Amino acid sequence: MHRFANPTRFLRIANAVLPWTGGLTALLLGVGLYLALLNSPPDYQQGETVRIMYVHVPSAWMGMLVYLTMAIASAVALIWRHPLADIAAKAAAPIGAGFTIICLVTGALWGKPMWGTWWVWDARLTSMLILLFLYLGYIALVNAFDDPNRGYRAAGILALVGVVNLPIIKFSVDWWNTLHQPASVIRLDGPTIHPDILLPLLVMAVAFKLFFITVLILRIRSEIAAAKIRNLQLSLARG
Amino acid sequence: MDTYFSMGGHAAYIWPSYLVAAVVLIALLIASWRAVRAREAQLKTLRHARRGGAGETE
Amino acid sequence: MTRKRLRLYAVLSGLAMLGIATALVLSALSDNLVFFHSPSDVVENSVEAGQRIRLGGLVEEGSVARSDGTVLFAITDMKTTIPVRFAGIVPDLFREGQGVVADGQLDGKGNFIASEVLAKHDEKYMPPEVADALKRAGHWKEGEGPEGASYK
Image (cartoon, rainbow over all chains, first blue to last red; front, side, top):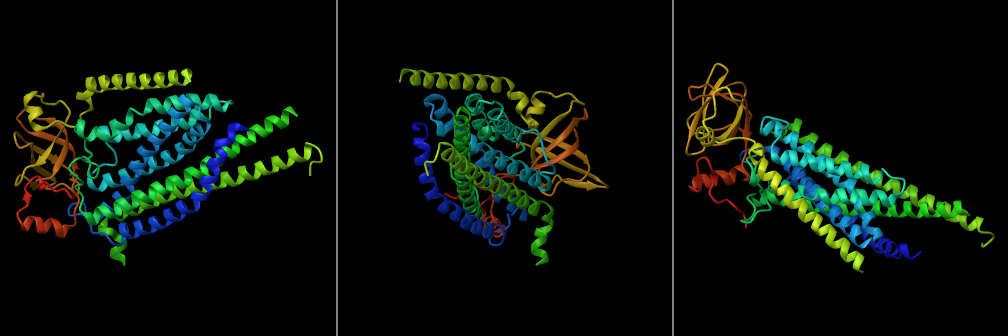
């Protein structure tokens, strides 16, 4: 049973944390939506469409942050064979894919009125679409084998290979001419967003992070239960 | 009120953005929650079955 | 312990190789990864008439003229300026001094005939009142917006 020693401790901590992250997610989403939709100014050029930014940008950040989490967990699993790391990577993938889909769809909805097009094949948009395919590839691969460990191994390698896409997404707007504008918040000389517009953005970003932690805990619990079920069924079958 | 919902004429882009985000996040939450409930319940019945099958330990 | 060490080095060197390979591929492809060319690029590389390209830059101040469904304007990068003709509807953000990307071809007489015009916006966001105040105070460069606007 020593294989589950760590997951047991994880479950104890996770279940203690869960109500807090869940409650804080709801609270911050409420505050964030109030600021984003009711109590923030329009932009001097983009008017009210700047409100799309409050879901578009946090989900873009989450798409990348979740991928980084998944890749680090995969590396830990591949190198140190930590069973919980494999489970965490697998549990994170659908959440990251969800955030990436939100980013791409809201980006199209923002691009049409502002740029005049739903989609262009510039370096930023294309690399973000590749991120979605990396997530989908990971999810397909991790579920493709009867032996879960083989799935974890193959998908973990894919997750590590895909990590090169993260700096490409981040710096695509600086390295090449793109239709997408350069970074506004995470830049060396400080954000170029007025505080009244930056505040709702940051509140929504923190809310999305807490949402990720909450759902990640639920999904890890679910994967741990599934692993225990598999082991029990095996031992029952052996008699 | 109407002027608020029209969002300066860009309602057709702004509201769907929030709707898409809400649908995806709520779907993720519900799917994850239901999977936890189902698997943890299955685990419980399996453990009962094993204890029962292991022969009058209770 | 040594097996774990070995796997650590294998993963790290694999990632390093991958990083180098990607950097090489990207630098080799960099010309194709560019979404648009500046007017200076177009003139320096003497792009042929009829070749489809995307031209990007700022809409020159005072250059926009409209006549029955056709928009005439000029795209500039502050060094070189190319006149553009576009028969169609320009996006909301299309304004003098704003970024723009036009898809089309040169007509051989120095004009660019656009078949599609996309607006490009900058990375600066602020309420309209703040923009007005900055303009009144003279902290506004035409074509670039607020000078050095960053909120540290």
